[in-house]
Amino acid sequence: MRALIIGVAGQDGFYLKELLTRSKIECIGLSRSNGDWITGDVSNRQFVEVLVRRYEPDYIFHLAANSTIRHEAVIENHDTISTGAINILEAVYKYSRKTKVFLSGSGLQFINKGMPISENDSFDASSAYSVSRVHSVYAARYYRTLGLKVYVGYFFNHDSPFRSERHVNQKIVQALKRIANGSNETLQLGDISVMKEFGFSGDIVKAIWMMMNNDEIFEAVIGTGKAYSIQDWLDVCAEYLSLDWKQNTKFEEAPTIHKHPLVSDPTSIMRLGWTPQVNIHQLADLMVNT
Image (cartoon, rainbow, N blue to C red; front, side, top):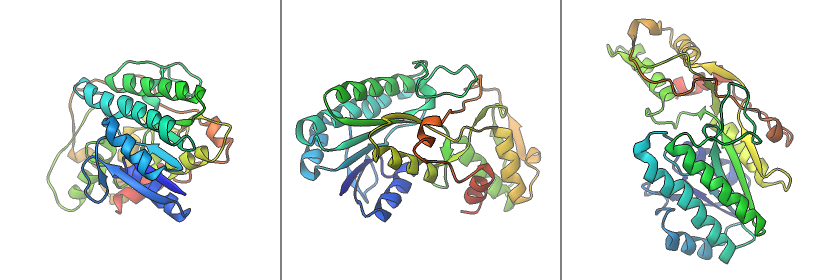
């Protein structure tokens, strides 16, 4: 059995590769910049076709994305998420119809009214990022009508030690670690009342693998179903480091990204037997001590 992981250099790609390797699946990785893997761009149709024809993988996981809602990334998101999905699906349709395809989605592509979000809720193309995500889902549904097995997992916030400091949870962890080691720096943050999930990437990929090994659920929200504030994360991380984060933190005015808590309703994926194993305290412990 063989799997092609697009976006293998990211945190989800890392944990998925480890999981599949333990399951005796041969993993082929694609990255735009990491020289340890096949280097290439999923928005290049001919390149994707060559990969699919050469390897005829049993599974393809499309995890690549620039996870930002900034408008400046609209073309990059379109190329990687939307065009990338179409290129993968068309190549599979033409050359390897046995292949099961997984496309990553996001909780950010749904209307958020402050209630737990399921895969049955309505989409909301309110950002450059969500536009691309919504487009890729409709592509998945179309190719499903042509007989392909195409799965979509809608991810809610999840982290790991492999996150970059571009993401606020890792930014907090690394700054607090440096402060604990004597740094005089100031941690600059925006609205810390924002409520979201604090899942673990290693748990999320287990849900992906469960989805890909069933013929019942083709779209599912993947999340913990539990929301915490960024202040909660600060408190938990600072406790592990014996710090008072308030002494080294300043707040800048910034627009609140989520007016309502961004929290999932993972009922469908849990029907497959999946439950998250790592809670917010365990995640903080892992990230602080790695």
